[in-house]
Length: 421
Length: 109
Image 1 (cartoon, chains in turn brown, purple):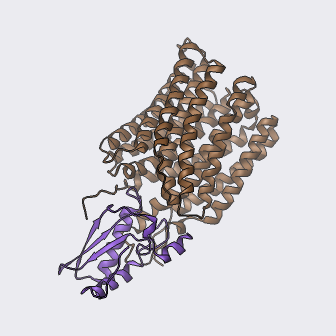
Image 2 (cartoon, chains in turn blue, brown; image 1 turned 90 degrees about the vertical axis):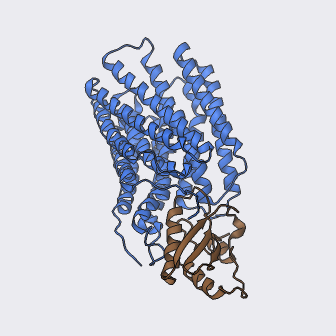
Image 3 (cartoon, each protein chain N blue to C red; image 1 turned 120 degrees about the horizontal axis):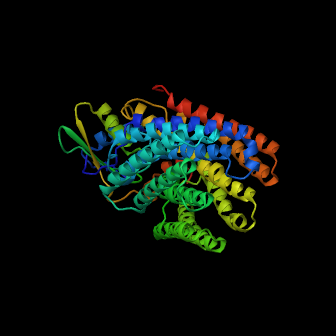
């Protein structure tokens, strides 16, 4: 073969546990949402909502994204993953850490259990950061996707360290600042630093690949990186040293939102110049998730000036259950079947007739998952706006149906047995 | 896209190899590598080796290894007495124009 490295995927044993655990965590998240429906009508700083948010952010979002990122990092960098062993360490520590955190939040028991959970999550984020930095350090071609992967990994580490400090502060107070203000900084470092920048970077590689589209406007991604980071840094610095001021926050939100617009314009340009005209249900999931992100950002003035916590809960819900969940629900079936297929059929391809990756999961279930997802997010949003726990419970049932379909499909893919046609 | 000239002394072997490559499907696009235009050249000049010059739809293709392995397997199935070398190149890079009419039809372009 010519001297071109096309990026070797890490062993499946380092990747698949993230997908399996993430799918189970999503099911548990929806169960907690159903059981803790009342918490969506109360102030956002309540034990059940804290447990639900951390299940969503770490057990679900970060877990699946870790799996996808460890798989895609070598592809983006055209190099092997720095350390598959560290990827496994990442999984062990994140799984144990999330379990401890969620249990201690649900029962609201600040102390060594919560702190231990926080320490494990910091270890996991540290291992991921090292893998991201050292894999991208030997990157053959410089790319903006690589930049986003590294900055997002740094933001994740920062976010979980602040989270650990907050967990310590709950039992051994030491911050001389308002706990809720620091909580907002912690949450936005995670949302705009970790999730937004990682999703921006990965989608700028995956969406063109899936659509067979190209955009000549890569500069938009550099602007996106600068604006997203500038908005976040200003918000964190100003918020920490001078307190959170509504008008200042609005200005920083506009800067970060401009970064989001640049990224979405890049994707739109790719979409316009795509060769693959037919849009599958996974891509529809992705488009809906972007729409929900935009709606959430448009809510920022409301939650700053309306003085009602329900807008804050709606904002968080649109981001976690709408944007992050929507993109993962779609992208899982754009990545996982291919990872599993590679393990079963890479060496058989061309020798005998083998199934395609799309045969490893049930496409019909994904269509139903999409419809139910739309119903579930609409019901949940309606329940939060109306402040009606009954509607939120009905939404919880819809969410549990989405999660059950998703979990079954993920397990069907993971438990696939090699066969020839 | 690869053209096989009738005047080529290896035309028959190249057509046999090409037929085999029609069975190698890009797992993401569901189109075979020939109609996708991924195969640039088949070289039968050496007695014991077949060199396949090919590309991928993107340098970052996560299925790249699976596709090149599929090409090697397909060629070695019809020419078991020869070794297959894959010469992977991105010069020229793959573009939409490299799709055959059949490839375009299968992608719904």
